[in-house]
Amino acid sequence: MQPLNVVVASHDSQAASQLAASLNAHFRTVSVARSLDEIRHAIPKHRAQLAIVDLELASVEDVERLIREFGHTTILCTHRIPDDEMWASALAAGAIDCCPNDDAACIVQAVKRNVTLARSNAA
Image 1 (cartoon, rainbow, N blue to C red):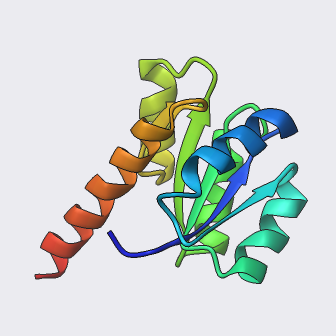
Image 2 (image 1 turned 135 degrees about the vertical axis):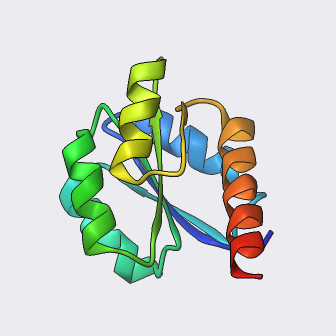
Image 3 (image 1 turned 45 degrees about the horizontal axis):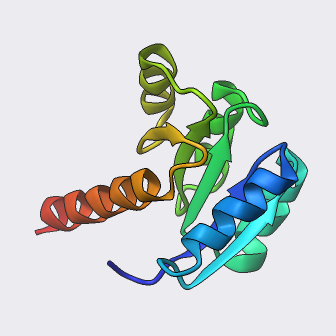
């Protein structure tokens, strides 16, 4: 997997920091944002190729706007307890997946799947 710059956005700063620490070994840089405004500033500032957005911080509509605004940045959604409806809504909005916000392994796997899929589509 290519080294990526990542922004983790969550309303819970402790959870965001813990997730960022868990993801540090897998990505080039991992930054934390605690609001939609911070996400909008952090993505270009850190040249983030991936934004991990907690659906308790942002709505599905916010996710759609982020995807339109930052087309070069992949969005992955998280939630404390994602269900099938939430997952389907996140994917319909353009996110690559919706994972539990404390499951770094799930997040890394979703990103790896997305990178593999993007490479095979480009070939």
